[in-house]
Length: 228
Image (cartoon, rainbow, N blue to C red; front, side, top):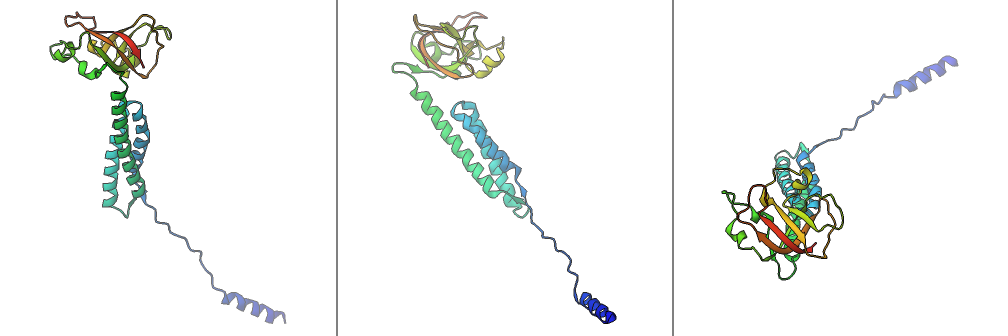
């Protein structure tokens, strides 16, 4: 009886086929790194609504996105991320346009009535180191200029300060600063301001232009009554 049982049991094992486990294969695609870079640039370019230079980051995002899309279309079987890259590119375009429009709007609508808006870049000296004629014509007129406060020893109750063209002047305090990149501002009597670090400010008042300034002197001074 035992022999019969053993033979029957062996027959059962013979009838069972060994099934090898199967491995599932997943088709992975490389994500376009240019698309990721475009997305990062788009996010950083949001700062362009507050600081104009960051608008250029959005332009970089557009360039990276376009290059990424071209790379994906050339090898769609190997490189993925089309949706990510196209979305990042569109977002960079949108932010570049909207931030530019906002900065232009803010610039031309912040000046109080009766003040002429003057861009700091237009006040650059000529190749001969002289004041440009169109800037010299502003002598004694009320103007409104945006710039950054040069660091001072005081942080409150300030009546005199220097307005500089770029944030770099404030950060590095370079002794070799171009004299045309700085305006000596004196607030009208009774007006005091607080120091604003690394923030764009608008100053309005009467501009005085010294065409015969000497080395070490500033060609521009202002008697201001507006500070924003």
